[in-house]
View 1: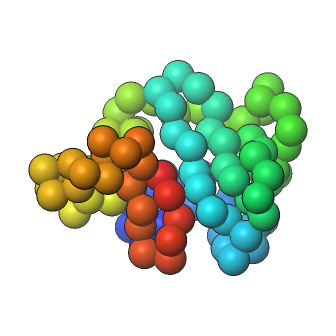
View 2: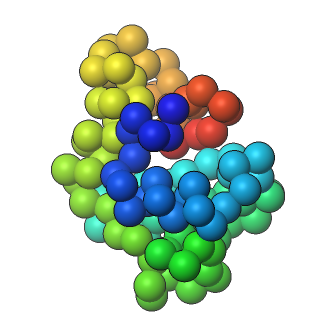
Length: 97
């Protein structure tokens, strides 16, 4: 499912640098660093993989988040309102956005 919704630089890093079985959550905020819950700990995501410092982390724009949310909800935000009101969207594989 991530292949259908994530921007190519995020997806490439996740697929080549991380074990998907340990990826529980992606935190995306406009103008902020992308963070992940990986193996029960929070890290920032950068082109090299995981980091404890946000300086080199990927940044999300409002437009990027909008596209990810639309794709994650199959372009039906209304159908996902309950999840969105909880603060996240769960995609196939149990990963929360």
